[in-house]
Image (cartoon, rainbow, N blue to C red; front, side, top):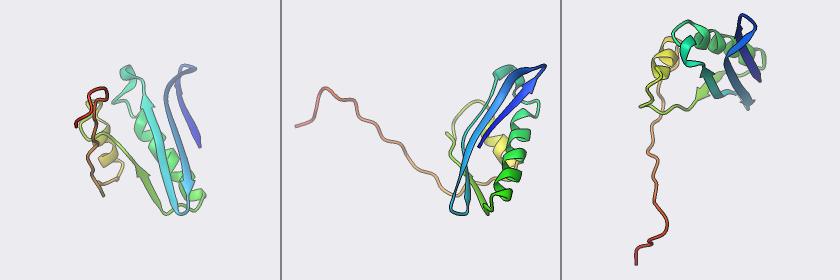
Length: 99
């Protein structure tokens, strides 16, 4: 699923998702910085929920960096999503391997 939000004929936001089994997945949601807080993200989510329902999905899932500064987590909470799992992401610099 590809959704595009426009204003005055110009793209301002997009959502990409897919259905797997009975789950709708929001793979990507982005809104241009000047348009954030104007309801574009919420409208894209609502449209995706309706599309997922039409495709017989019973749940909607997405991943988000809980510490992002764009306000995404607040948007997701307002849209009725809730946290069901958290995890850590680990990293290691390569080049000097331990003995």
